[in-house]
Amino acid sequence: MAQRATLNSVAEAASVSRQTVSNVINSPELVSPETRERVLEAIDRLGYRPSTAARQLRTARSQIIGMRIAPVGNGVSGVVLDQFLHSLTATAEEYDHRIMLFTAADDEAETRAYADLIASVGVDGFVLTHTHHDDLRTHWLKERELPFVTFGRPWGDERAHGWVDVDGARGTRLATEHLVRQGHRRIAFVGWPAGSETGDDRRAGWEAGLTAAGLADRPQIPVFDGVEGGRSAAARLLDEPAAPTAFVCASDSLALGVVGELRDRGLRPGADASVIGFDDTPTAAVLGLSSVAQPIVEVAAECVRQLRATLRGAAGPEPASTLFAPRLVLRTT
Image 1 (tube, rainbow, N blue to C red):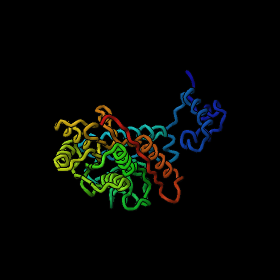
Image 2: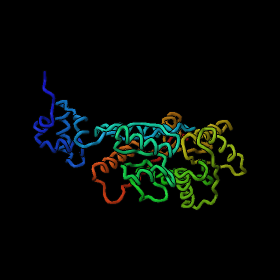
Image 3: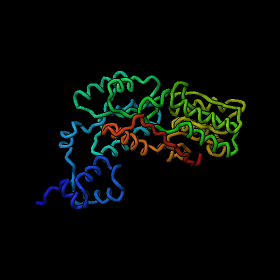
Image 4: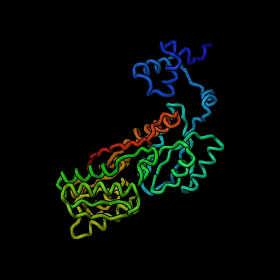
């Protein structure tokens, strides 16, 4: 029977030290790309598998990261969080971490779940989503000096803690500027009611695009997310004396509702009126909906990187923050 590969045998095969192999496994950013590739090749060839149990004993860590699953929403854009969770799990597993999912009805219930998981499982840290002003969860974690990172800004104080986010305002501005270049002068915004930090951010990008183009007309209808919300908003806007010729939407769900209303009225999306959504969901791709795409894989990887830096004590004196740029994906609408 072949002997089980060890840290020593991998180091010997790759002509490096034991510490270098350990760095490749635990802190790959410390190793040059060439050396890292040589060590990974040796690990793969020898079939080496690090001992999670031994690492837990040595570091007094569980290698577990907690994350709450948000309640199911009313639109198709919830798939973005599904993509984020998949990418987060895959990236965490590369460093031998595991994601532990849990549910909670609200912020208070989520903080109670934190306490339970820390006491029962010894969770190392948390990834949070759906950040908002006066976020009880981040205050709770900071007071106890517990490691965490958020997918979403700490609205109102971007230096409050480590975070990763996508620039929603930049995305809707890209969409608006594209429509202006196409000759549109009455561009509507279909978004959520005021008070949604993400929704307000996306509305601000549309407004900035109109301002840069010198367009004063700003038709908009606030509705709750979902296809029916988008349909009802489009109906009201299209019934106005000066109907919009283009629509920028805060989500693909709303955009699909707008497209449905246009078609019901015998109008051709992309020809008689243009529509751009947000999130670039698989549904948008299938139906030919133009949309703003978020780099979800990169966001998830950066969340893991920031959290691991905190766990290793390698984080800087100031909280880390990363704002990714989205991109505009043009299709038939």
